[in-house]
Length: 150
Image (cartoon, rainbow, N blue to C red; front, side, top):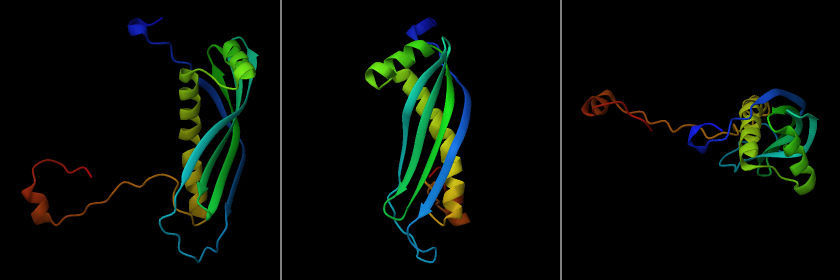
């Protein structure tokens, strides 16, 4: 075990989309404002490939509160304590916090950019929070010292 009591990182070895689906429930000409967007990733199945690798099936959903939905399904190969992961999944339907963090982080970091592109094509707002923009005149900006972070 590494120093400091940290567990070794269990990387995701491969990632693959199996299906991508997007629907807009209103007309594209209708303006969409202040829509609640919920992003969710869920693991649907874990199966052991060998002692060190497990196949993880997942579903990612971006729900645009009655305006639209984006759904992505796929698989990834998780490398680490695969046998224990698959057994815990089969017995309890869940996984260790460390494995869940690694798996869901990988799902979100791969699916969110894809969902942003699909949302653009469907004329839906991006399923990520946009950074706030704060534009000031040069006189006000010169009066401040240091960079501004909004």
